[in-house]
Length: 413
Image (cartoon, rainbow, N blue to C red; front, top):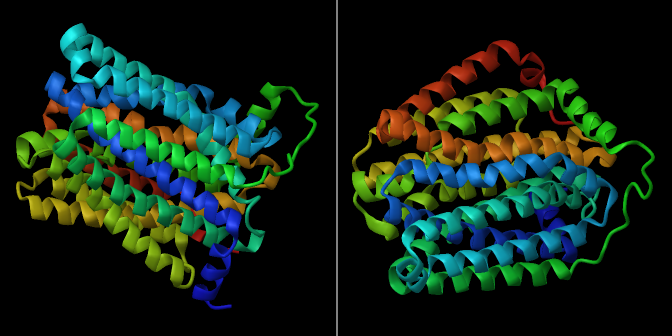
C-alpha cells in the first residue's frame, strides 16, 4: 500500500480522527495560554528568571506524578483519565483568567497576581503529568499495530500544526483584545477538545487485575527503559538537547528587548519552529521510512544546536524567524524518530509506564530547560546563555556518537 493510501486509511478511522482533533484543540489552547502568560509575567517582572520559574512550576508536579500516572494509565480506563485531566486543565485556565485580570492586578497587587500564575501553572502540571503518558498509551488502542508508526507521525504533525496556530493567534489576540478575553478563547478551545475526546468510546483495560505492588511495577518501567539501550539512548539524547538547547522560554525577552517586535512578533517567533516542524513532518508522513534513523537523529540534534547559536546572535527578525524555522524542522525529525522508537520497542502492557518515563525525562525537560534558560539568562545574559546552550547540545551529540552504538545501528522493523 502506498504511503498516501495508508495515511488516508488511518484518517478514515473515526475514533483516531477524534483523537487527533482533541490533540489539535488542546494544543492550540495551551500554546495560546503559554504566549499570554509568558508575556504578562514578563511585563509584570521584567526578569527573564521569572519565565524560567514557569517551567519549574510545571515540571515539579509533572515529574513527581509521572511514574504513578503511567501505572494508572496501564491499569485503568484511559479515556476517562484523559477527560478528567482535561477538566483539571480547564479549571486551572479559569484560575489564570482571574489572577491576570486588570481588576485583580490593580486591586490586589501584582505580587499576588504573579503568585497566582505560578500556583495555577503548578496545579496544571499534575493534570498534564497524567495526560501525556495516558495519551501515548491510548493511541495504540485506536489503530492497528502495523499502523502505529504512521499514526504516531500524524499525531506529531497535528501537534506541530496546532503549535503554529496557537502562538500566532495568541500574540494577535493579546494585542487586539487583551489577556482576559484571550483566556476565554483558551477555555472555549479546551472545552471543544473535551467534546472531541468524548466522541471516543471507552476501551477495555489491558491489565484488569494487578497483583504486583505499585512500587515493583514502577521499578519495572524504569528498568525496562534503562535496559533497552535504543530507547534509553534516544531519550537521553533528546533530554539533554532540550534541556540545554531550547530558547523558547526566553522568546519574550528577545521579542521585547533584542528584536523589539512586541506581542505580535512574539507570536511569530513562537510559531516559526512549528511551521518548520509541520512542513517537515508532513513530508515525513508521505515518504518512505528513514533508513538509518539513529544516525539521522544525531545529525538533526546537532543541526538544532547550530540553529540555536545562530538565533542567539541574530539581531534581524527575518533571520531569527528563518533560524527558528530550521530549528523546528530538525527538531521535528528527532521527535518523530524518538516517538517511533518508543511505539515499536515498547510492549503493550508497559506503554503507560514507559511513556511516563519519557514524560519525566523529555516532556518535563522542556519545563526544566525553561528554568535553566531563565537562570542562565540572569547569570550570563540572554544571548550568551542561548549560545552556551547550543554549544552544550553539540557536545552532547559528540558524546552520543561515541557511546550510543546500538542507537546508531537501529533500524525500523
